[in-house]
Image (tube, rainbow, N blue to C red; front, side, top):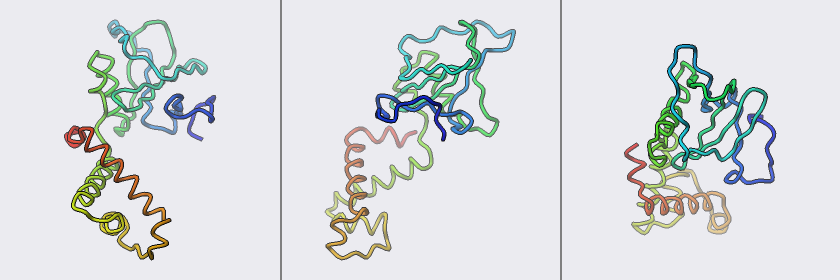
Length: 190
C-alpha cells in the first residue's frame, strides 16, 4: 500500500498528510541514535513542528512542511535527547531531502529548505512556461494543446469542448499564471 496506518482517508492531504512506509518511499529520511562517541546533538529548533506525528512501535513518524515541500521522517529507537544520525541509502535516494532537513535542523530559515526540483518538475515547469508564452501571444487553447502536449490531437469542435485534453491545458495555463505571478525565477535557479 505504501502508507503507514492508521490514517483517515476522509481527511484531506493538506490537513492530514500521509505517513509513508520508508521501505517503499525512498524519500523518507530515517534518523537513528548516533553510535557511541558522537557529540551532543543540537537542540531541536522550536520553529520546526511536525504536521503529523505517529508513534508505531519503537519508531516515530513525522511529516514536516519545509518551504512548501513535505518532508517525511522516521526516528528509530527513541531514547530521550541523544544525538541522531541520518541513515541514507548508498544510491543517493533522499540526499536532497536530507540536505533540506539538515538545513532546517541547523536553524536556517525554513523557506530556504526546499529541495531542488526533480527532473519531472523541471520538465513540468518548462511546459507550463511554454503554455504561458503561447497564451500571451494570443494562441487558442486548442493551438496550445497541439503545439505543446498533444500533437496527434484531431478532435472536432464539439469533442474538443468536452475533452480531458482541453481541461488539462486549462489547468496547466492556470498553474503557469500562478507560477509566473509568484516568482517562478526562484524555481529556475534551483
